[in-house]
Image: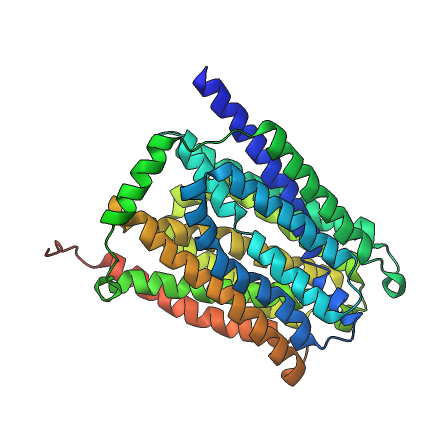
Length: 404
């Protein structure tokens, strides 16, 4: 009976996260072009992307602590309702500063993904936790496929009369639906016994000494930062670039994001497992970084739809391969008792990259031209490739026992 209830809770959580992420996917491709309607320059438009990640970086740990103390359900409900207000603010915005306030609020409330993962951890055993976490990954995948496609339909096909308000209000409606699903169908996962254990663990937990982190871990986190930096820079300027280079509107940009989401889902859904068995993780990481770098380079020189789709396929390949492999490698070299802290460090570095990437992309777009964020992303991937070759070299060296 308990297993049946847990499966039901996981399914409801999947629907809740999926509906919420659909709203995120709807807004992301059109946001820079939306900001332009209020006179924003490219560097200001990309800051709308960066400020979301900055708020997420600052508030996600806070939501985690609150969910440990007060329960998962109240935090999920609060953040989902906050997302309703944030998207509604985007929909009714009549100035650039309101866009920034609404986007900041959306970033603050985005910590509900971490709370959802904690919910999964509460109701699963170690043996089936990976399957439970995969539910969150599936929600991400569907959200990034369907969200941009829905946004493209809602915004209209005429670039000169794009309806930026309707997608934002539709996203607010989705978040309201997710809130109602959680309110009616989702029980609390954290019982008083588990709460007590968490508090005892927090009191006994020692801070991880960053100076004792292995060089290989630092290299892997460095690669993770560089990959995320390049991807975030691309995400924040691709719509602006397509408008300037191809005379596209927000609908076409949204469909391009949806296309990359489909390719990523195909790769992560089955292809990556087969390739990992055939090539090994480190070789696959190198191929992923190569694909991402080449894809960014081709975007910078694309003048036709065919070449752009080839570039987008390579970028989707690089993202879908490199990020999961990096997470896997970092986790494998980490003792079980330090998994949370180590992966938290990697996640924090990724969040910083999502702040720095769009910020740099906006500046380079204005100073050096519309292709600069993609060409500079290629150079960043050259550095990442050099570091990944260092990981390969270290992996091939004879293993020596670590001295305690």
